[in-house]
Length: 212
Image (tube, rainbow, N blue to C red; front, top):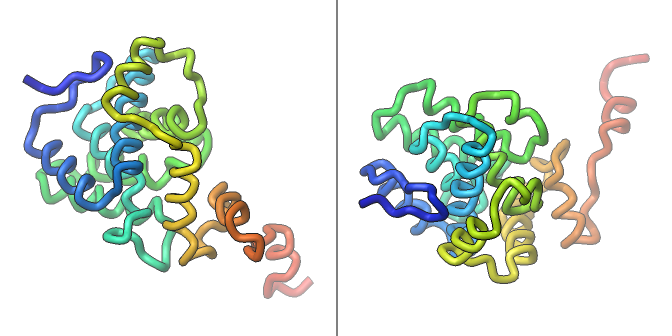
């Protein structure tokens, strides 16, 4: 029998079991529980909006979306979102999913901190952003019933989550501050580090190598 939380069934497949094991080994409790909630919230909202989503792809997208914040998968040269997207793409390829499936999940993870755009792409892309926006930003909670919320949080608690996820973001990005340019992620670095200097888009344009 597949595990069911708030009416959402966790796919009872080898791929999902191995995805769970991989992320549980790499992530701490805060990130693991957050990632499972992202899958659950995203699935609930997708259903409420009439989106048909491949549950395995939604699961891998949710579970892997913050994997780039972990020491095992973080790089120093690219955005943490791309680290997680690359890991998910390779995982899905290794488990026999199509290149199109792997690409959809890559996009879902790479774009999950980019507002609005994912909602105009495939359901497997949108579902991750729906989950992230729910768990981190508290958007559109009215689409999820009190009973559903209680069931998800009982299965995957969120103690002091707001502070813990901000710290996880900072710890995962502090060593690669330049990768936060043009994203909301530089807000996190500025919050924790008063010496952090944001790059200014206008200054870059005005000071670039093109002559006037």
